[in-house]
Image 1 (cartoon, rainbow, N blue to C red):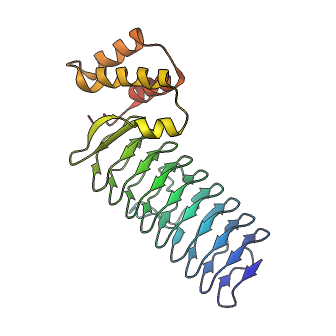
Image 2: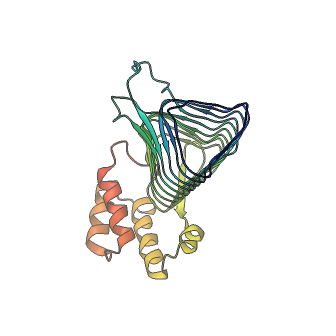
Image 3: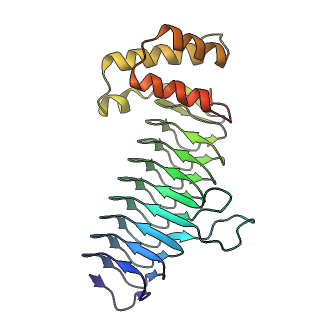
Length: 257
């Protein structure tokens, strides 16, 4: 371990092998830091926060701080983070609330750029990118490999589907279905995230089926229930299409169209 002499690390904190902790960083009593993590200067690690191996917090971030929720009364709630996450300057991540399940959870291999915010009880998958000043309200779910642009504000309880790309300065008030690309105020879906899907190894057949599903959802005169019914009957059930249908059927806020 390499702990700068000005850092304040509680004696009960659990620090893995090979961890580096920079100047003026504060590590609280109930913090667990996995092996090989780099914690830069002026970082505040608070509450009940667990971090997996090889994460990087570049500096001036606040992780595990109390939720910005008037109902929170000091309960033991957590931030649980996986491995290989990169957290840039001034990122804030709040721990969960009792009402929301108690855990703000972040997966593996995520890239959280400067000033992005993850509020209480959010559930972030793997390989997610939050660009500068992307802001997630409470209880937001972001599925794997979604890309959220700069200064995007996401309403509480919204779900962002896997492999989506949301353009900058877009307020998001409803669910964004998997594999989509969109931007604007209100957010408009322009099609499937073709380049992103190809980069992640989606086949031409899978892309073709998703394009037809998107046509039925966004370009036909069908309402959503009718579109779901036709997709279920007419299109081959590839794994991506199964996930899309499940997402649509379980949406509670409605979808951005």
